[in-house]
Length: 64
Image (cartoon, rainbow, N blue to C red):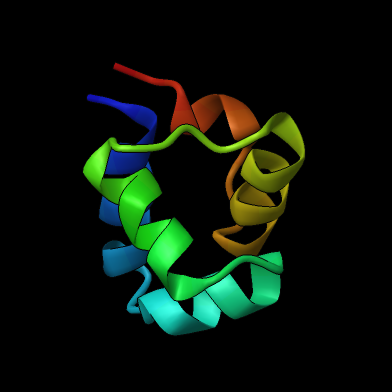
């Protein structure tokens, strides 16, 4: 699984809207959508923010 797929899986499991996670992470919903689809990779800072919002470790986003 890619980082984006892991973000989407965890986000949906927690019942969080894409718009909410994007807003809390300080990025646009379009950017989060591109990350989840694998078109873009998040910076380490953005990845850490997303992991914090999803209440998981940054390493969880990199799991295969």
